[in-house]
Amino acid sequence: MNTHLVYFDESGDDGVTTKSSEYFVLTSVYMDADNWQSNFNIIKSLRERLKKQYGFHVTEELHTKHLLTDKDPYRKYKWTEEQRREIIKAFTLCICELDVKIINVIIDKTKFRDSNYKVLENALKYNIQRIENDSSGQWNYLIITDKGRLAPMRKTARAIRAYNPIQSKYSYNFKNQPINNLIEDILEKDSKESYFIQVCDFVSYITQLYYKTVYKKESLPNRVGRVIDKQYVGRIMATLKKADVLNIKASKSTYGLVIYPK
Image 1 (cartoon, rainbow, N blue to C red):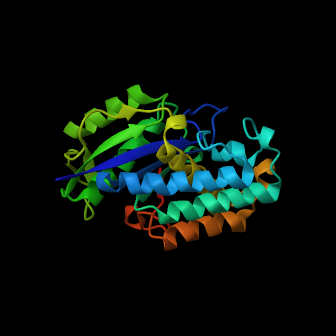
Image 2: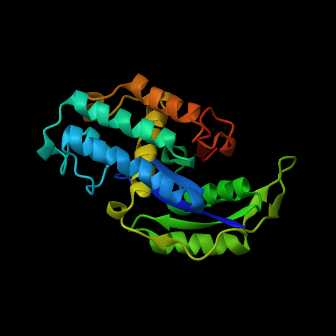
């Protein structure tokens, strides 16, 4: 049985206080382990081009929100708005070259008032369920996540190995479908050391912007709106879909976005 590598990162925070973000997006990027090196080479090649064109050091982390809002450590480069758009475009096209699948789970915290709602844990559960469905018992997978939330993620992954209730398509009844193909505990890696976690960060933030502007009819954050607009965000999502890197079977939405609460 082949093994897939799954990387996770998020946009927004998993809190439910008045100071928390309204939306939390958890993104997974997964690939056959046999394709890891070729995928890595594609991203490394992009980073080398960005170094030549914009001085962007190959080993410096790409944090999409900070790039768009011209925050440190990117301010030192003194990129123009056009240059930042070009970097975003280049990274989008790079992702389209990868042999990967991507799942985005969105938790809309404006839809509930339960301060005990486990945002991260539920987002992770819904994401893993869809990876499990995609595997169809044909491959197993190992999960690698950014640093900071390992304990609750491990606890959740361990729990759904034993109890994973799934609602029937034909009734309100639930049946237990334990996760079988996840191997090992979830592992942790600093995003600075992983191009693939940085891909998750990119897609997660763009997905959050898409949800905010299209589903919720809200404006982009001011500093982001100086660089890209709603149409630009939509073109990124459409480009990723056309490249067949989004797992559109994850849900019935146009881009396979998994949105909870329903």
